[in-house]
Length: 102
Image (tube, rainbow, N blue to C red; front, side):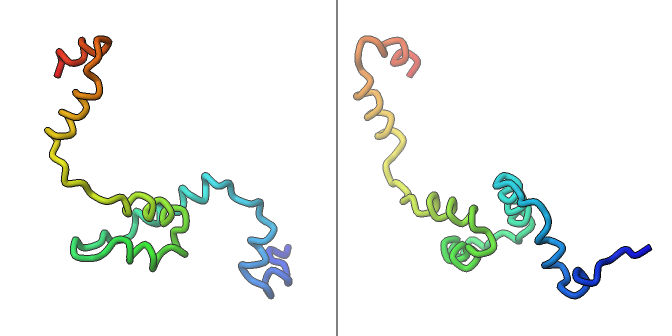
């Protein structure tokens, strides 16, 4: 009994994968996340945006997310200033119970 096909032997892995059903987007992303989790983390001195630029072909979905969220600028506003602004905007009667908790 023959276990291989001459055409598959000739064309190799490419031919045998061609007939396989396409993977779902969810499965592709899950595989990408698994591969990414196996990578050694960057040192603190390295630039994460440069790393993602160099690896965007390997991790296309994660690279899009990383670029979107790593480009958000940090803030130097103190937490007290943020809370005071929130209290000022929400100082109506309907929020009086919430103000008591603060």
